[in-house]
Length: 594
Image (cartoon, helix red, strand yellow):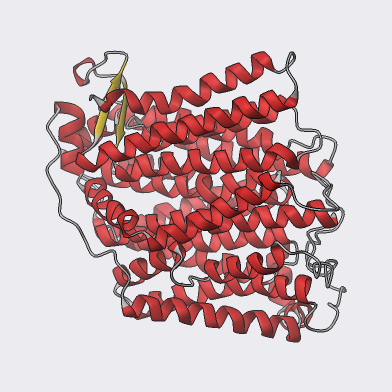
C-alpha cells in the first residue's frame, strides 16, 4: 500500500469537514453539527494513526499535485515519526476538545466548530510540511483561527482585547518570518526546506543568512511563547474558551518549538555551528523555564496559572531539544506528549469549576469545591503528574530529557521548575477542595483575579458525561505515554530520523529510501524514577507551604520585583511589540557570541 496519500489527506479531512459543517449549519440542529465535527476529528485521528504506523519503516514523502524537485517549486509533505506524532496529537486533542464542547457551551454556534476544524488543519499541515513558505501558510492558518477563537466572546471587552493582543503580536512575528523566507528565496531561488538546505550548505554563515535565520525563527519563537516573546500567551489563555486552551497549551505552542528545530536542523544545519544553536537555545530555555515557573507560583487566576506553567514547561522542552541529540529530542517529544494529556485535563477541570461555580479565582473559590467529586481528586493527581510523578508521560519525558543534558545544574532546574508548577496547582486545589490553610488575604493589587468570568456552561447538579469522558481520555493518555514503552521507543527512532539531515534531503529530493536506524535508551531508569518522585515530593511541599504561608505573604516579601514584572506584563500591544523586537535582537546576538 502506498502511504503517500495520507499526509495530504490529514489536511483535507478537517478542511472538508469544516465546509460541511458550515453548509449544514443553518438547516440542521446543533446536535448534527456536533456529530459531523466529531466524526471529522475521529476520521482524522484514524488517518494520522495510519500515517504514524507507516513512518516506522521510514519517512513518507509526498509531492502534491505531481510536482517534483526538478520543477524548483512545489508543495512537499514529509512525515517522519515525530512530525506524524505531532499531527496525531493535534487530531486527538481536537477530538477531546470537541467532545467537551458538546455540552459545555450554552450558545456555541457552528462557526466555533468550523474554526476548531480549520485550526486542526493548520496544525496538521504545519507538522507535515517540508516547504518553508507552506510552513508560513499553515502557521497563519493556525494563527487566524486561534485569534478568532480567543476573541469568541465578542461581548466581553477582555476577550476582544486578548484576541487583539494575540493577533497583533503573533502576526508581527509571522511577518518577520516571511521577510526571512523572502531573503532565503532571493539567495537560493528555492522554497523547499531540503532545497534551501542544500543550496546554503555550499556557503558560509554570512550576515545575510544570519539575518534570515533570526527572522524566520522569530515567528516560531513567538508561537512557542519563549521569553521574551511570551507575553501574549497568558492573556490569550485567560479569555479563550476553556476547550480551546487545551489546543493552545497542548499542541500549538509546542509546535512552535517543533518548527524551530525543523528549520534549524534542515534549512540551516549545513551552515549553523551546532555549538551556537545549542548555546542560544539553552539560554532561551533557561530564561523561559524560570520566568514561567515564578509567574505560575504567583498566580491566583487558575487559567493564567496553567498558562504560565505551560511557558515554564516550554522552556524545559527547549533545553532538551537544544542538545541536538536523539535522546534530547526524544525526551522533549515524550515530555510534550505527556504534558499535552495532563495539561489538557487540568484545563478541562478548571472549565468544570467555571461551569459549576462561575469562578476561576483561587481565593474566591476557597472551600467552594468540597462537594466536587470529580475535580476534588483528579485535580491534585493532575498537579502531581505535572510535576513529573512516575509513571506519567511527563515523568518519563522529564527523565529522558534530564539524562540527555548531562548537566547537574540543568537537571536541578528540571526538578525545581516542574515541582514549582505542580506545587502551584496543588496549592490551589488544597484551598479550593479541602479548605486547608487560613482564608486568603485579598489585598494585593498587582495580581490578576479570576472573578467575573462569564460561565461558558452551567451544570449545578452534575457534570455531563461528555465532559467527564474528555478529561478521562486526556489524563489516561498522559499516563499511557509513560506506561506503554512503544511510545517512547517510536520517538527514539523518530528523533534519529529527524536529526538525519542528509537522509531527509536525499529522500525528499531524490527518492532515496530511508536507511534503517537503531533504537536509543528511552525506558525508565532508577535515577529517572527517583528524580520524578523528588519533583512530586517537592510539589507537595510547595503546595502545603503555599497554603499555610499564603500567596499574599509571599507576594509581599517579593513586592518590589513582582511589581516590576507586573508592569512589564502590561497588556499593551505596543509594549509587547517592543519586547518582540528586543528579543529578536537578543537572539541574533546570542547566535553570534555563543
